Amino acid sequence: MMKEDKLSELSMQLSVDVLNLAEQLRAKHETVISNQISRSATSVCANIAESKYGHSRADFIAKLQIALKEASETGKWLEMLYKTNYINEQTYKSINKTCSTIRILLIASIKTAKSNQ
Image (cartoon, rainbow, N blue to C red; front, side):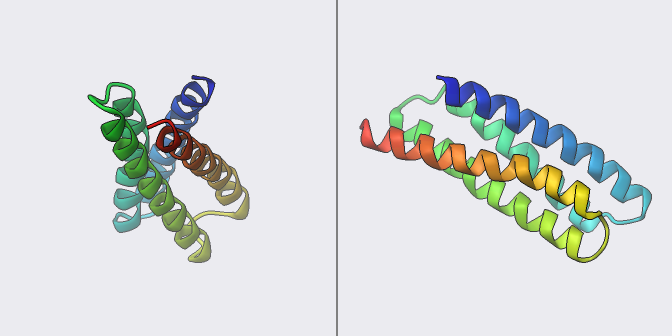
């Protein structure tokens, strides 16, 4: 239960941070990656929220696995933005830390859910 609450909190923070970042990127006329990262980050949050109301254990696990894939994608977009100098190191490290923590918690939650089947 604690992991799920932490996941919800962190995934909302990731979404908010990325949406704010995307707004800044659009001001710099960067739209391709800002659209992609916005979709992947908000999908993390949405799938974690959906998992709580899964109609089965398998559905719960599937939603968490989708969230994990989207978190991985978000991390890759962040890295790309950093390596192309659209974001500075501090911004990259800050948002990526949240994203990495989410991935760690999701992996643990998925393993636990699978072992309790």
